[in-house]
Amino acid sequence: MNVERQVRFWLIGLAAALVALYFLRGVLLPFVAGMVVAYLLDPICDRLERWGLSRTVATILLTVLFLLIVVAALMLLVPAVAGQFARLVERAPDIAAAVREQIAALLALVESRVDPAVMERIQSALAGSANRLFSWTTNVIAGVLSGGAAVANTLSLIVITPVVTFYLLRDWDRISKTVDGWLPRAHASTIRELSGEVDRTLAGFLRGQGTVCLLLGIFYAAGLSAAGLEFGLIVGLVAGLLSFIPFVGSIVGLLLAVGLAFAQFDDWLRIAIVAAIFFAGQALEGNILTPRLVGRSVGLHPVWVIFAILAGGALFGFVGVLLAVPAAAVVGVGTRFALDRYLESPYYDAGGGSGE
Image (cartoon, rainbow, N blue to C red; front, side, top):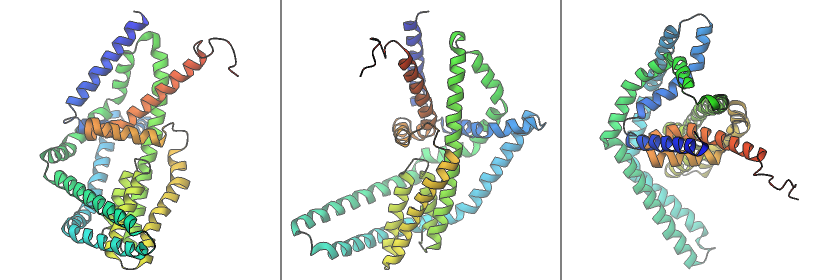
């Protein structure tokens, strides 16, 4: 088989996989979630095997322990989060009105120093943006609460994901050996090398960034609650969760927290304390957490991660978000491999000159 036919074969296979993923995206969520959990737990399962446990026993222990941790976290967090969320939805109109009043008061302070025509345009722009943001947020919340698909996805995550996790984790090594046997023999060693690099990239990013998100969520929730912000627990957890997307969590959390602080506090010092918590969180993440837990040699640039997550979410929904980072790692490793081959090929230095 010549190179052209091989390329055509793999491109057709990739296109078929993407089409299937698009049409099945509505039912894939628990399976993809189970695969992600099994991937994260597989190294621990391997270690338990080396300690003398069978694969099945190690899988049962890890699955039960994981479920207990998840259930305990939900039992501790859901009542508090649900209570704050209900109050937040109930008070959303009052909060929006209070924020508008604070913004109007702030604009009044600078109105005397700005040209009236410019000031009018600023006020109209801020009012339009605030109305659009509030309308969009209301629609999203209503869709999440009323969508039957969301309820079905939640139930499927609770019921199906643990089952998928158990079977994938138990058979992970056997599945890996089976897939390895399907590799084209002429390129098997190269594919194994690239797969190992993808695995190191994913392991470093997913486990490291997941730990960063957990620690930041705890830091933000505790700090905002200690500062007296009424909905600090929700804002902190949302900011920590969104920190999986570089820069997005801190920005969204800062805007939400400061907006709620404007509505709740009349004291500028307390508003500044709320903002300072997020700046402190950014300093903690950038100088301590990310360098120590994720490292700088993961090979996934923040801009590339942001693009991959947004593109995956736009094309395939939440399933695309879960698959975005693995896909970004595969594409990144493949791109670096192709670039290395290009730099070693005659196409790079066809004329034999230095180019200078």
